[in-house]
Image (cartoon, rainbow, N blue to C red; front, side, top):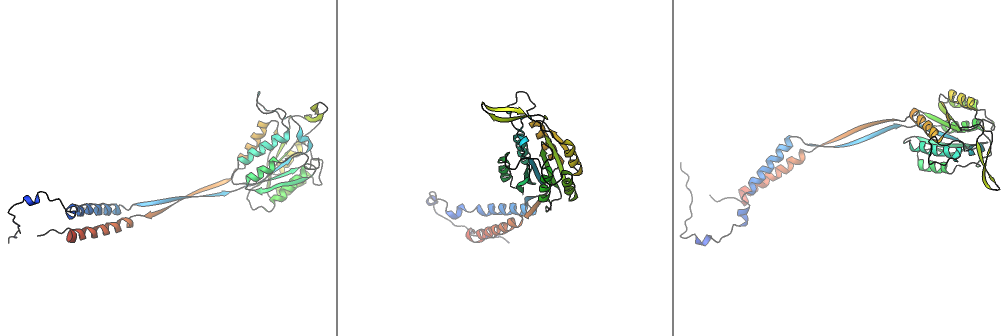
Length: 313
């Protein structure tokens, strides 16, 4: 069976030479383009593309730390000179200033630990309760100065005050870092008794003896300005060692700014915060987002081919 071809005869085709292709004629390649797009979408959908959003969960087991700082009159001594010759630090910096600077650096080295500050002389005072707001803590530390409290060295009372601050803590690790340059000569609580009470509730105690000499220089204001006199300032190292032993900690002797910084670094290494990091990835299937556009484009191609761009027989 032969199919008849319909032909239109024209006597002259010069009439069509200047004719320009119409809008429908320009759309003739569109169905083919749409088919290729549909095919590409289906191939990608079969490949099952996915997008993942990752999230990290950090679980930390913080430590509660109380810094106990001696601000008695003997902390004015200026015997903790730098170890390096030609150091830029002032060689007349007092024990209290060196101690505050080292404590400030120690705070900077922590991240998820609650840290508090207890100061003491003839009595003890909580300058800042345990907090994660290190800016506030460092502001309190910067304002500490000798003369805030009645003079003396109440080591036992200061230790009891720090222990009382940690008594209600739910942290698995509780630490006291006590720095002093003298021996207990004030307060109603014996240092050994206070250490045993702290150990009984699981508080670990580190002790630091600050000072190089037993007869250091002390600044005094005289007729001709600031002068220095030597005065006895013994450190009861035996008691500090005993306190650290009872508190399952360690005793250190600091004789220079660098040495005190190293001591705080070592304590920081011994009392590391436990941090666990878990990573999660949430995947989203993208195939559905390709199949639906492919179906719509296929319908559009059929519409164009069979209706809009349909050819005459």
